[in-house]
Image (cartoon, rainbow, N blue to C red):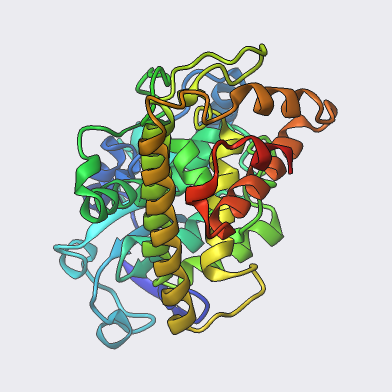
Length: 394
């Protein structure tokens, strides 16, 4: 490969290396990653079911065979090495040797790679453009992945969310069990391709958990997954929060508490007398607005409004207070069974929801649950509360 340019991205602290290389070298370097759908957890592989994609791919193949130059493929490299000191612009290097031992992913260019490999024979010495985006961990590749996936309409939005943040999903689950080992075996976080659905407490869709992570970062209940994920204000607000590495344990703390509250609510099986969405305890966190409301209220309680820059000491103090209050709430729920099986007052909750504006019911419910959970977190004398009725009515 020949080095065309080496630049440092000061925003994400990553290194960009623009190169050209022969197709034969590119295949040796990336074929395993390509066969693993880009070597990114949940990455979209070659599109085969879309008629539009088939037509576009046919046109791309025809253009490539006629000598067209495609935009550069972008490869993600996870490495601690400082390649700015190892490589020089204009020089030639063996890419397999330079990136030996590194984790290589195709973060943009699966469709182009498919064209390259389908037309490999006879084009082995054909020059193609390849950019290497180098970071010392997977999280720092998020920025580049978000930018590259802006406006990609062929993706289902939930899949786009799951793919873009796929490298975080495993970290979320593993960190959850590290902080809360008692949840092991009680929680199931499943992907879009698993074909599962929530039938009981403790079951969550991976894209829903990631959506909660977005809500946590921007501290806003208004997250519409049908909107473009990469809206400018949302993308950069998220990136600023992701940069603050200390915020991730706070999200795990909040997620763990939500799981515990979900399991505690599920013990209340007393059917609501008023028909509605919430017939028993497990239905509360089966609702996306309830999950979002809880996470955003908790994030705001610990870290303040999104524009607030609390000192680490203050965040730590608020987090400790939050954990104590959640333990008090969980203890109160446990003590209320079986004497007060109507502690959740689901009939009142259904009645309140029935009175919300139907034109924007999702937004109204998210605001409702955020306000309710914030009130619960701020109510110091939780022992004196005989039911959640007054909180639903606020």
